Length: 303
Ligand code: SF4
Ligand code: SF4
Image (cartoon, rainbow, N blue to C red; front, side, top):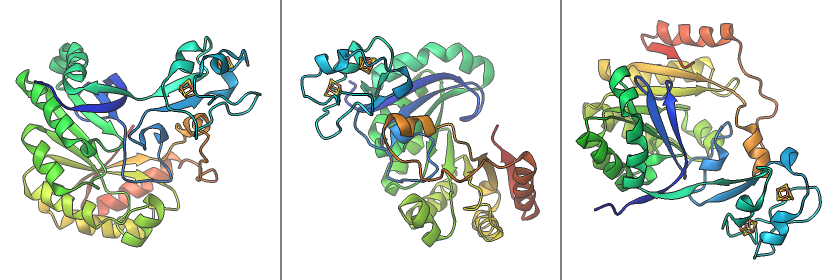
């Protein structure tokens, strides 16, 4: 019987960037890190949130009349009073113009499975499957275990995108039902890691060792942030760390910095702190790739 639930922001079909083949990606809310470059700010907290898209608002006032908690701010500025809002979503339903958006919906593992199973023919034809992402899906290891067990019953391939900052027990829970791990190593220096993500990386590196030793199929990934982790020092030390695993741990995929998430920071009325950073050119990205390759890392670039 299904017992586990998670707050899910999106179930996105037909992804080709989140593991092998064509995949359906389940985005689960909640993350222990606070990476400054995060492209999914709506997935950081575990609870449901309401966003406001100012340029869609017609100032019709329906949201204010609907809200029972006096949480709508009148006027033309940001509408949601976060101190009063209980994320009931009534205003989202009341808005005719899609200017209000609900981030997150509580779903059981079984409900989630029934939705992802609809894409099974794409998985079967492409060697794809289901990926859980966000955020950090392993903050909900029991939910992931249950969802993936249901997938395994129907021979659906399973993949986890993880930042690794969770107790080792979470990995132990999901290992028997997980085919593939996409594992972020954002920065190798613990002080810089803490500066840019809010947490040091000791637990992340320990879990990486544990996963590779356990024989799991792991592709390491690195969001490539200009001026932050594209330095020679980070490239060398990340390579040394990965090479210490032998063949099981020498695959790295670079994920070049982009600014696709900035509109969501506006919708949540949160500052985006990397305003001054510009995406890298193809040549700059290739230079980093070549440096990793020279160290003996099998390095690819995410599209
Ligand atoms: S209901 Fe929508 S369009 Fe109308 S004021 Fe509220 S946010 Fe703006
Ligand atoms: S989500 Fe509910 S409490 Fe929050 S502003 Fe909208 S109607 Fe009010």
